[in-house]
Amino acid sequence: MTRTTDTHPNVDTNEGASPKPRLKTSAMIASIAAEGQRTKPAPFGHALVELAKSRPEIVGMTADLGKYTDLHIFAKEFPDRYYQMGMAEQLLMGSAAGMAHEGFIPFATTYAVFASRRAYDFIHQTIAEENLNVKLACALPGLTSGYGPSHQAAEDLALFRAMPNMTVLDPCDALETEQMVPAMVDHQGPVYMRLLRGHVPLVLDEYGYQFEIGKAKMLRDGADVLVISSGIMTMRALEVAKSLEADKVDVAVLHVGTIKPLDGETILREAARSGRMVVVAENHTVVGGLGEAVAGLLLRSGVTPKFRHIGLPDEFLLAGALPTLHDRYGISAEAMTTTIKGWLG
Image (cartoon, rainbow, N blue to C red; front, side, top):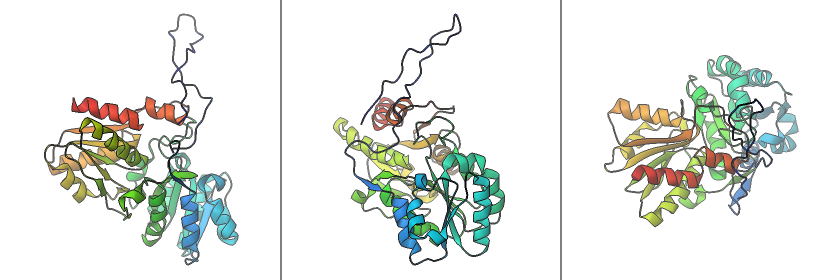
């Protein structure tokens, strides 16, 4: 994987100001796949097309981002069921609500930042409050873009978790993304999915994985550490588990594909096993995401393991190449391995 130097000696031009290290931003790497990693192209777009062949009520809608949310594949196959709303996310959400009122199942796509910040009130009032059958598939979740706070949706889970009636999904890889599409259609009510687009890593097929809404799945067991993770952090956690085998550290990985509703039964059962440190790992700010959801669940239930949290800091993140950013903010496999080894002493 190509990496850039973490900092360079740019300094503030104000006289007497101390040097301020800044990230180089010349290489905006958009892929979350490591070099040589297995991938599948546009799993969401292809899965939606296959399902729509037998479900004529499915329509695709976007706000000028069809190509960048893989919805262009649907548009090519079903041009009469594709609606391009222009650069107007609020209009997109209001129109999706109207389509749902008429019995359609709209898949509305945009970037996660635009759904969670720009169109939040429209989703809250016209979709969630009415408990409408609208499916939101939103790309660039968490730190999966190098283009700074304008495109980094580091707080989307906190916002959508707080919305009544909203189901919140965070897929790990291409396989889970494909499996989520029919599950979203079968589920009655609004769904928010963090969309992995483009060439998406393929990981979970090695574990016989099958997605179910509301169910966490144990991918591997281990006696020393339990990592509870969602999204791409499950991919990282599996890498960490293999890396720590060399240090005779036995790591279990529990994947939480559904952030809301949370699978409290499975999480409590696994966290209550004695002798294991529990680490929640998420590609989201440490405020309001999976970590705080799990911590609250454990505290309310009287389950008190040694608990640690890996997530993005509560700050506006820098721009730069993704590998550099993931290292800097502690969510790369290498950074996670170092952190967990430090916690184990």
